[in-house]
Length: 194
Image 1: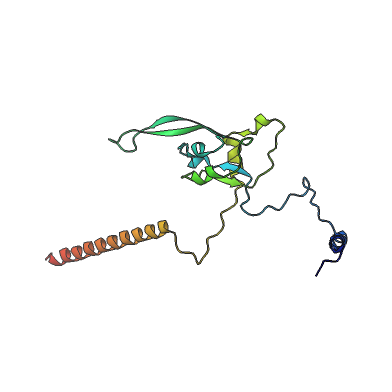
Image 2: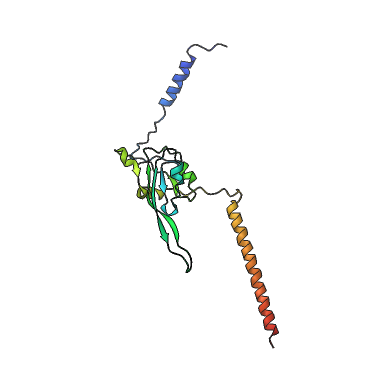
């Protein structure tokens, strides 16, 4: 069957008339903050205590927008007769958000959970050179990172936790067996005395 001439125009006008009668919903942005979805990507927050200056984030960044400077520091031996250790100390951690494409590779490759997505998105600057944020600003954003979503109660237990639980149960069983053997030896020693 051939379409009726002008039916497309009539459908379009019907949609227009339907939407004209509805109340418009406009969020006045600076006055009313938008409702962001949970775990939305805004900026990258740095948890400095977890950073070991492994440089994985800077090496894997496709835009080379992460700048890290560090130095080695000698830590004295923890016990007498032990040897001194050296460790990296973070001097500078900066991200140039004018280059960053928000891919999240740096967050994914960080083996020590030092980088997180923060929902903050209001960091516009008038000068492009001010979009390079140093570690103090990245640390401020860290405190806006939401809690991770709860685990599914029906999910299987992570292998790391299962292995740790097995090791703890095995160590507890060995300790209990040793304590029982020591108690039996003590009882036998007390029974042998006249």
